[in-house]
Amino acid sequence: MTSEAKKFPYLRLGVNIDHVATIRNARGGMHPDPVRAAQLAADAGADGITAHLREDRRHISDDDIARLKAKIELPLNLEMAMTGEMLAIALDAVPNACCLVPERREELTTEGGLDVAGSRDRLAEYVGPIKDAGIRVSLFVDPDERHIEASAASGADIVELHTGAYCEAVANNEELLIRRELERLARCARQASDLGLEVHAGHGLTFDTVGSVAAMPEFVELNIGHFLVGEAIFGGLHSTILRMRALMDGARSSASGSAGA
Image 1 (tube, rainbow, N blue to C red):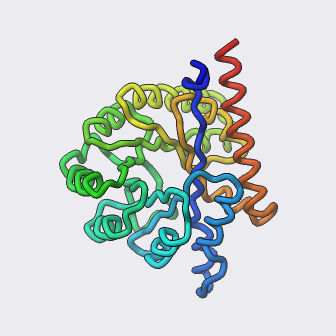
Image 2: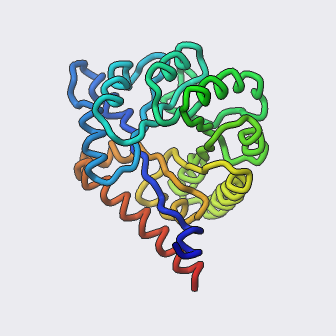
Image 3: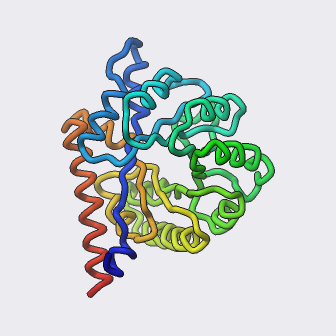
């Protein structure tokens, strides 16, 4: 492996299937089936499947988690709030990874990262048992140096940096804010990598925003869901994931080439 290949490793794509379940739950029944969506994602080149089992079960259900474990060969990343119920489910299901996220009943989607720096004692109640079960622990955090440092101290294996502020800046065409948010993501990705954490990113990524994040060599996985499911209405899930995969690969290849020039 060349030095540039080591610097720019393969970038994994995790596909979040939550909102396939959201559509199903709008009228009940089994269609569309999120497990079928996961199978299509695997066929299109996804490297993992993400599902968020919320306390109110607004989309993914307990049965979905069981069927994903039984039928999908890709690694399963279970997003979960820090509650006793969710911990018990995680320890029973034994996914590849658990991503701990903040959760409020009234929010439409996860609106921000964990306050890792301010909740170290509570976090320890979950990180320890999950790791003892052989499950990797990921923390969903805002790109903030305090939370990166606290994440490393917690014993977590992974941090997933919240890309929502960057994506919102792109949507609003705020050039100064776009540059600021990209600099913040790059800085925190380097810090996390230097501290020995595996670095992921996600939230709000689209065809238009993924390239700048994919070009940062510290990231080893991007988790994308809502956009892929929404875009699949117009172009099909398989082709949508193929295009996202190509954009990620192209951005990483271009960045690697520029670094080696």
